[in-house]
View (spheres, rainbow, N blue to C red):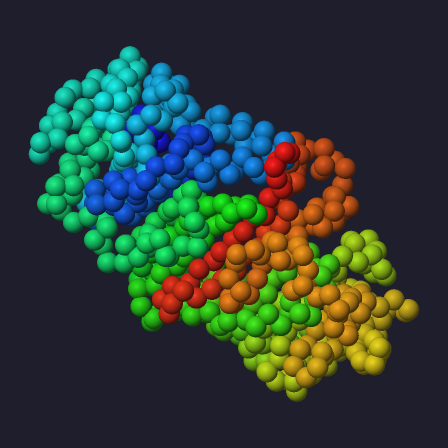
Length: 574
């Protein structure tokens, strides 16, 4: 709510893009809301749930962020983290926009806001139809359960801003009384209103506020009635019992918004393509007993186009082959299909096409292998890249090594690939591979494998597990899964905990055991980096995380979901 006030008090740049919030704005909204809601109570739905509030929102809204005002999930956050990470988070929340506005307006959350607020506080970005390329207008809607108390807050809010130069005058539109003041930016206004004793409404635009009233009166279409919107926020669309935050991004702006908030440049061709093919992207953040859960769901307009749609389901073969000590895993299905999707998406984007060409060239120059003719055709099933701790032989310095597994649909094609790879290793003059490599045959138990030797040192091993799984491993890591480990990753306690509640039917995993990872990082990072304040702060946050897991699944032929679980250490006493 006060985030909207903040944006009204600040001048906006001339004709900025829609993504004016960027990382700082989005984090500010989330951080401000988190500060406000830590001490909130349970309250039944009704006028306060997201779908109810959506009846007030103009149908062309492009960004919607809803914050839960129930106490329990926010209180759960206090159960996680180390003292250092809690202190960092606390410092950040103290400097949040909400706390700044509360101080600026002379209001106190517990006394002036908490007694009347309930349900979901919703922040909305809506473009001005007359200036579609201009900055978005902001709308904040906060349900109230006590009109007298919320009006007292609005009065105190206006008085404080008046002392700082605002000039509020009473106005009326379609039976709704509101207060309006010029803002420091001549293109913006300060709007504060009580809407029928049910909602506190703040806005940066007179026109947007009046449109909101028209929507509320049923004279203009609302966001809830937009095709598909209700399903995005229906309870059954999330596995989270009670989300802390829910976000809706209209497909026309979703990728560009995410690019701005993550500082990633997706390129104009891909953004244009997403506008044609994306219906929406939604996000939900919540808690479970292990830590924080995040869901990111992509909805396509139809099954056509080139954006990824249906995900091939993984059977979990790599999980049964890798040792339980594995601390990093990236697994998936059908590399060939993924590459084809990348190629299709890169068309017309010179930077992306150049990057793909560089990948092709690097593989060709280093191995004499043609990526699209000699590698991808047999990588149509499951694959995995894993990191395993080991300090033997060439791995004594890093303390870990990499393993690559791939189910092959063409054993002869895979064997030809290995033959060419051996030839490239033998002719290596340095660089990625040391000079002097001689391929040889070794045995692990009764299983023959190929090894790259430099003198008596084994640099790498490769071969087959059964008929359809090919592997390449650094050093002597082949012995970790040849023969199959008695205690594979799939049976390990950390993997079970860090993936709790994530769907087992999925397209693969990202898995990171933070404890093992930090042990290796601590070993490799030089002392001068460890003494850097930036590293100290980052390490404080990482120390609070036990593990991270991500899955990708199909919800339907037009919807896919990424699910993240951040397993956190409990705070002392929890």
